[in-house]
Amino acid sequence: MGELLRVTGLTKVFKLHLLGGREVVACRDIEFVLRPGEILGIQGPSGAGKSTILKCLYRTCLATAGQAWHRSPDGSVDLLQAPAQTILALRRSEIGYVSQFLRVVPRVSALQVVAEGFLCKGWRESRAPQEAARLLEHLKIPADLWEASPCTFSGGEQQRVNVARASAGWPRLLLMDEPTASLDQESKRTVQELILELKRRGTSIVVVSHDRHTFNQITDRVLHLNRGAEVRAGRGREYAKAAADH
Ligand SMILES: Nc1ncnc2c1ncn2[C@@H]1O[C@H](COP(=O)(O)OP(=O)(O)OP(=O)(O)O)[C@@H](O)[C@H]1O
Ligand SMILES: [Mg+2]
Picture (cartoon, protein in one colour):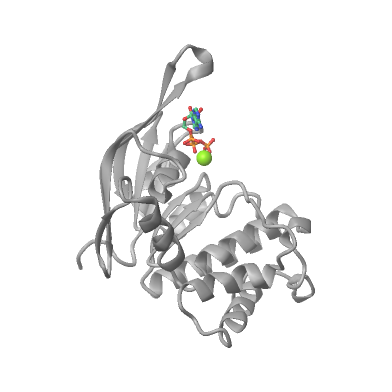
């Protein structure tokens, strides 16, 4: 089946200059392989380095060491080392990211925010708003909000717009940081369904979550972290069962 992403030795050490250069190891020697259409879960206690791993892959954070080879149609790219321009192009064309905390652009409507994601991935201007509307509808964002800026939305609505924007155009790789946190049960289900639709369309996903139920429903494998170190990898369902047995 091949692989889409191969991560080896991913390490991030933060230097706290205000504390006399003290070092914090956020994650150490992380290794995993992600195949096309596969969903890898990352789980672990708060502060274990889950968000840091996703940020290093999306390059909003510079890794201290390691490699992350992403197989793009134009060739393989090391996401940890590639020039910033290459990363920006990949973000537009094939890598999506759902941040743990949403940053929204003021004065841009929810529909535009999501349609932009389709346009960047080469969808026709006549199709993009239609597809964006379909995503917003699926995520149960009320239609009378679509023309408004997500700045004024509730936390859960913002989070769903965030998920819609990152999913727009069906990216090849999607990094999701707590996509179902702060959602009610029904919204969680709609996000889970969207994640499974992404998988069916071939998107490979790395998802961080504290929500064991979400993991049980969607992941193929789980990487379990303990304060920066990888301690165990297993199949999602097996992991959820083992965790439930404790
Ligand atoms: N910009 C930063 N500067 C210094 N230390 C940081 C920075 N970002 C993260 N850290 C530290 O790195 C460690 C891992 O943080 P990270 O946000 O990756 O954890 P997490 O597993 O996502 O936690 P949570 O479940 O609470 O979201 C923490 O100890 C954190 O304090
Ligand atoms: Mg986090």
